[in-house]
Image 1 (cartoon, rainbow, N blue to C red):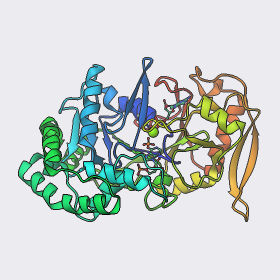
Image 2 (cartoon, protein in one colour; image 1 turned 90 degrees about the vertical axis):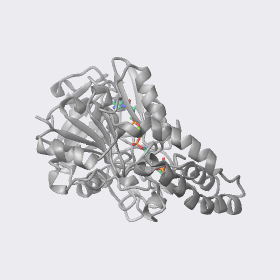
Image 3 (cartoon, rainbow, N blue to C red; image 1 turned 180 degrees about the vertical axis):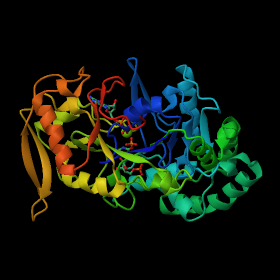
Image 4 (cartoon, rainbow, N blue to C red; image 1 turned 135 degrees about the horizontal axis):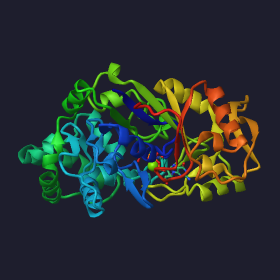
Length: 411
Ligand code: GDP
Ligand code: IMO
Ligand code: MG
């Protein structure tokens, strides 16, 4: 039995989806515990690419896939995503997909307010999916959760209770058009009918799995430095993205977690605004963006690219109690004469780099660690030494099977 959390160690898009899809083969259930459709998790299986925003990345392995109480779920997106997977022949029935009744619902006014705020100054560069406004309402106890949606009377009352304040803000502050309660109620009642059978007590479902000694995979979204408490505030998302939230966001206690693997992209990317000390504005940055196809899986925005930042990663090791590392996109570094690693900052907060020799060989078909070019192994070993934690998995291609597993967390 192992209960493993997969967490992003940078600013998201580290390749969590690929890794969760791969490891889900060995897990009995897969759980998302925070965030919403701001996430975009890519899986490439048999040459076909799938992007999931809400449905956990265990779905292609037909494993029970749970949406925990810590998530904020846009039912319109979820219905679309279920239909998408169905159309691809992937089973997403209520015995596979389960939604916590306590998960909060992203309402039309959340999305509208997110977009309106981002049209002014002080932009965060959000995904526009209503994430911040939905979490605000949860915390201020004006939220609507899935169990409310299933009880039409309660849902209707809540819409009529909360909408006037939202409309006041939308009309008076943003001079935008107010929303009609009946339109929302009609639309969301349909979602409620479609999703009713999927709603379960996720905490109890996981507890039963733990009692039955099953393997559980917790799928983080975003990354450590987008965490609302520990990230580059205010350029962060609105949830705790660190491993500890796997417990709060799914309804289990901390002693149930047996391992935490941090997904590290072999360089650094960031989409949206905010500090990025190792960002590259030169041809190397452009090259990483092109070869790494660094465009957002949710918004299509180009991702900013830069060198690996060990200072950040040391913080990620501490903040998440990482037990192992998963290095992804190592193949993207191929062809560079030199590769830099930021090992510290000087007094002016500029990165201090260590330079390593690159490699020219294509590594995307390699199956065995020892077949990697000497300099690629040198790069990995240096990361291990600097972070003082083992690399358990190395990914060399978007494809599921092109992954070198040194240590399987479930065996
Ligand atoms: P996530 O949000 O952490 O799941 O990551 P995304 O799916 O948003 O972005 C990662 C991108 O890199 C996707 O396009 C993946 O298909 C791709 N990817 C994942 N691992 C690798 C790898 O080892 N090599 C390459 N070249 N691409 C990868
Ligand atoms: P995955 O799970 C990368 C970023 C946005 C923005 C900030 C706040 O695919 O790694 P939000 O819409 O959450 O209020 O936006 O967070 N962001 C992500 N960046 N990957 C993600 O998810 C992200 N989810 C949010 O770009 O800077
Ligand atoms: Mg992503």
